[in-house]
Image (cartoon, rainbow, N blue to C red):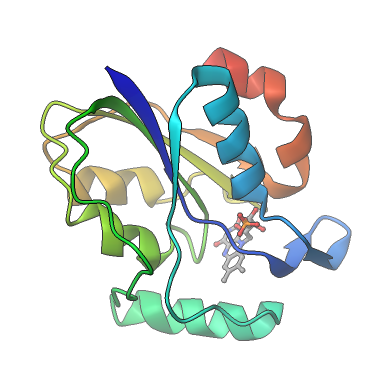
Length: 166
Ligand SMILES: Cc1cc2nc3c(=O)[nH]c(=O)nc-3n(C[C@H](O)[C@H](O)[C@H](O)COP(=O)(O)O)c2cc1C
């Protein structure tokens, strides 16, 4: 059976160890592409119809509001059928201690019965935070394995860590 990487990632201003920086490619996207390269998995990018603000602080406000209201932002495309896949890597930046609500918009529509989920996150200090517990709640029929957390600023040098984790 095949493997799939589902991920959300944002470009624009982000908070890195060196301060606020404009990043042309999202940290999680860098990690997602490496996982796909290592495993031969298909890639599915979660994209919201309404883009998040480029400004870091404005994005933080929008994301906080979405989390507090348990929002389900509308996506550009959805995946309906994952029956071809046995292992699904789900990746996201940590936003306010868990995955962005856009991930919830997608995964709640999918049937994960008998599937293995391997979570991966990029972050700036909080590791996987509550995201794995939230995934277990959102996908109760899946076997959710240990996740991996990569500091966003280390995304491009995470190859070896990822290779032993996959
Ligand atoms: C809205 C928002 C909320 C964030 N919340 C957290 C957080 O709670 N904990 C943390 O360690 N990092 C947090 N970060 C930092 C991101 O998780 C980190 O920069 C990540 O690598 C961004 O991934 P991306 O480039 O794929 O979007 C937050 C960033 C944003 C924009």
